[in-house]
Image 1: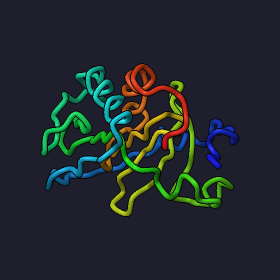
Image 2: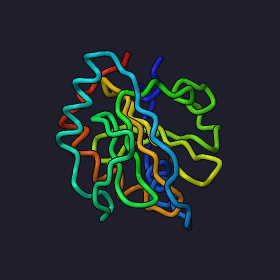
Image 3: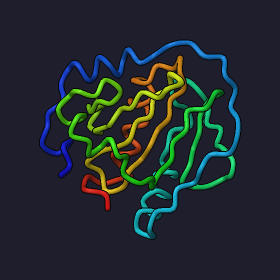
Image 4: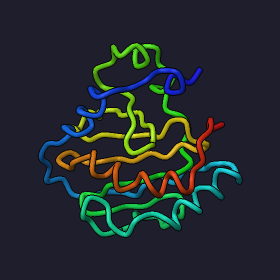
Length: 166
């Protein structure tokens, strides 16, 4: 059962998204793992790649290596988008659905539902919910994640239809 479909998320989740910021001077390192979705999901991801904004949170697009229509990046350290990822375990975790996991919360931004996970290094990982393909966005520590999600929402709504990913 997809708890995002049945559970409303309100102001506390959005406030948490807005305040997800800190400081970091880490530099980018290593390649970005390219997802391996099925053909239908890969087509939607290519469509998303074609409508992604040139800038996110004021940062120019700078795609990661290896080059792929399934990944995109902005800035340094990079905000990384990966399209066609597998469903995160936390998305079906009963503790998250009950609101008792301090490192994961659901919420929506501009019509796109997200699972937010705080990483051990202070960064955040967001994964779309209630869309026919999972899109993951990694936001480094120190970046205003709410602006990132606002900037990406329009493209995701255009390219990735509502539905349940398989």
